[in-house]
Image 1 (cartoon, rainbow, N blue to C red):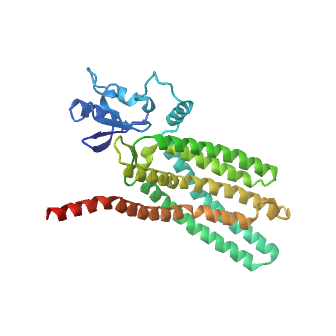
Image 2 (image 1 turned 135 degrees about the vertical axis):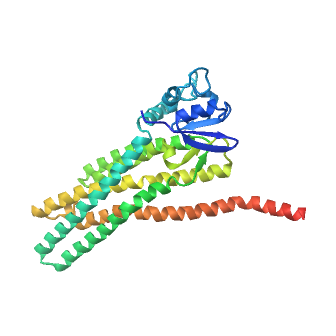
Image 3 (image 1 turned 180 degrees about the vertical axis):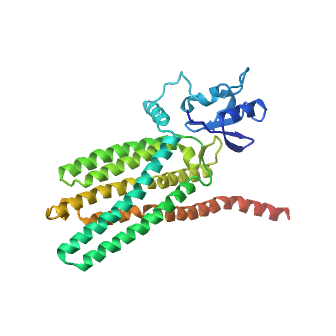
Length: 351
């Protein structure tokens, strides 16, 4: 079982992450008091340290009871009837933990990175063959230009995706409870299922088979966003019991934007993979002389443009996140203005 990181708060300050063994050592040394608050990923609220089993009990101090206690079960009372959706979230939270989310993110980012190499080769081949069939140099040059653009965007994506992941963990966002996280997770998973069913059924009904990938992309991206919302630690989002209204507003705004930012690598990966599959069909239709290619929904030009959109997503997300930080700084300045004016007024009265 992977180690669980714990956070603790005392004297209105937050500390951590620390291991379960270190948390136990702090309690034994008196540095962590029973009334201090502790939290780990999966817990809905911060709890008093005395409520964590094994932390202040007498006897030997094994780290096991603290580490092995399911985070989602801490502090929940057995006499309170849970909502069925809470039970569902607890199951998802246990199965799709932080390691699952981060490994999934890496997998899709790698798929998009290497898939773009295949897209570049397929674009060069398709436009070269079309140029030869049509005896058109412009078609060949168009394919070469698209391939070079895709190669540049692939280079940018490979470097901006790690930066996106780093930015999503920079700074702290605080919420007073996990209500927004849980509701966002449920909404994302429901929207993903709805998009998969409706878009794919519609694509089959009108025989727009490339449209099947649209439903699949929405489904995977929304489900990942739902899993991510249940792991706020991956986005440096903390649940603190005492958060002001302004801090809560900024925390909610920050959480939603960080969530959107972290879905970009997954959308990038599945989008590139879908264009690779569509380009394979384009090659098949072109070589088999099935006409018209565009009517089948596998036009090389249309698929290449779609690949460019997905390849540009990491760069676009990075620039949008920088713009978000600019807005956030302005909001913080506006929210702090009344306090500064009060202090200025007080100093003038003192003088």
